[in-house]
Length: 308
Ligand code: HEM
Image: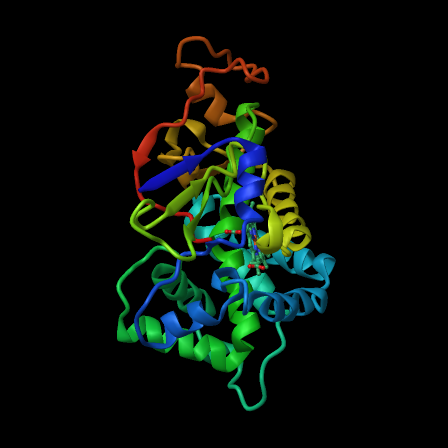
């Protein structure tokens, strides 16, 4: 039996319940071996030591330095000829910025010999999105673990989808005048000892709508400060460089998070996207008043994109 919990207090209780554990996934290979070693997916017996290790790894990273790197990498990717904030910026900049501050284990080749973003994307595909294990993904995960260790690879994993969604949902919120949709809508747990009455005992926790964007309980996100610093830096850099989302051309997943977010240069203070949105009944070229615009996420994809 599968249960969905939406009430914030009930979600916190579920996340604090040791009888509910992150879903296990069986199988061999480097990607699933990493998954089984990560704090994020650890059952109560192994979790405290693994969490302490990732918390210590996060503590060695200076959020302002990562944010500064993100500013530089974002500026380098902005292009008046056209840029998609999802694929060109959010999928690349947080990983590039964070990875440049992760300690590299001894004997590893220079970063230029290794496409870290592609490797992280392959890791997230298998561990976060349930993609089938492939030799390519396993090789990518092996390379990440060899270079950054289990903790470094774990941080790159957690950062990849969630921070990207934090950036793109904020860009849309800023341009539309509406509240940002949750970057991480939900997480899952299963009964540690499923039995006949509860079946698989899967529990879906709607943390985003319940106002718990960084979770709760023993697995609560330890990367919040880093993620906020990264997202703020990227969003501010895009805005101060004079770029804004083209809302009429933006596409969304079933949770309202952008899957395609074209940015365009606002020339001489005039926002072309608002001019084109103004053709939509109810919107003046003067812009959207908070909560009053006609903007509604257009649902283009139903892909499951929460890789937490
Ligand atoms: C630099 C970026 C980030 C890092 C390094 C990071 C790190 C982590 C780690 C290591 C965990 C597992 C903790 C444990 O199991 O003890 C975690 C969990 C979590 N993170 Fe983050 N995170 C980042 C960004 C984000 C963002 C942007 C969000 C949401 C907006 C988020 C939401 C969460 C949530 C909800 C959990 C708990 C998942 C669960 O209990 O099932 N994280 N994060």
